[in-house]
Amino acid sequence: MYARITGTGSYLPGLPVSNDDLVRRGVDTSDEWIITRTGIRARHLVEPGRMTSDLAFEASCRALEAAGCKASELDLIIVATTTPDFILPSTACLLQARIGNVGAMTFDVQAVCGGFMYALSIVEKFIRSGSHKKALVVGAEVISRILDWQDRGTCVLFGDGAGAVVVEASEAYEAYDTPGILSTVMRADGSHHGILSVAGQICGGQIVGDPFLRMDGQAVFKFAVRVLSEVAHECCDSAGISPSGIDWLIPHQANIRIIESTVRKLNLSMDKVVVTVDRHGNTSAASIPLALDVAVRDGRIRRGQKILLEGVGAGVTWGAVLLQF
Ligand code: ACO
Image 1 (tube, rainbow, N blue to C red):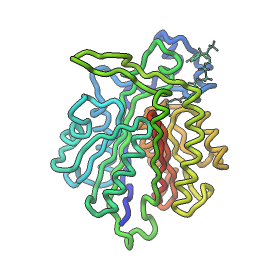
Image 2 (cartoon, protein in one colour; image 1 turned 45 degrees about the vertical axis):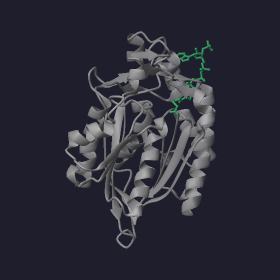
Image 3 (tube, rainbow, N blue to C red; image 1 turned 180 degrees about the horizontal axis):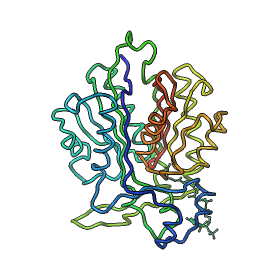
């Protein structure tokens, strides 16, 4: 039994917000600084009143349509998010109600930018075990709501959005040409929790502590480059292929310099890499399924190709999934 992606979808709220738009809104930065240090030219920011489940809903409808799957057929729904609508219930349950499913096992995964990797790997285990047949996996974020717009070292880096995939069971005999997920590797090292965090909490109805995202950018940068190349090798090794054998690399979209350094370490060409960070910024758990959907819909990714997805996020969490699309 294999777990195979049968449809992808994504959604970006509102109009693109350029670096110059941020300057006009009062952020003490410049287009030149942001592009040189990060490769980011624009991001989308969610409108007031809209929530993560709204973005997840739009992306999910598109993924279900692409897969030719009805919401009622799903037996597993996972939303990876750092910015849930509420503390409880889960955003996945809110999404489940919106798409019109009753009965699927439904929950959120919180592994920040590594969340979609974790969620996809969980789904793969459920499907391979035979217990579940059709899953919806979503990465969705309104990360702009936890940014300190006075902190130019973080607020220019992020954007809002959602990406979704439908994953279905595929019998090994049917899956000879396109088996689906071939290997997964998930890791975390909580001893580095301080390099990227939102350390606030709700206590007695009040926010206690700092409610905004804080980051040691250089520490995150070095950590990300190291683990993204290590985990790519590990994931390819466990499927018995070399990184040079993959058709497309879809890394977490945080910073073009992190992507380029990882690609250099893997001895790959940037021609094999899907890059959306320039248009989307860092959408945390949404960045990988968003980039996957963009490349599927523009025709770059085709059935039968080998795709390596990899992400890293606060925790620190990281992971990779190798699949034959
Ligand atoms: N505009 C203009 N100047 C700025 C800005 C800005 N937006 N932000 C910082 N600066 C200034 C600083 O104040 C500093 O000025 P100073 O020298 O006068 O003190 C100068 O630029 C250099 O600051 P650094 O923080 O040292 O800049 P650095 O080269 O490290 O780049 C960056 C910062 C882009 C955040 C980098 O460290 C980075 O990309 N880190 C990776 C972090 C990341 O991508 N995180 C995403 C979330 S984590 C994840 O998704 C895995």
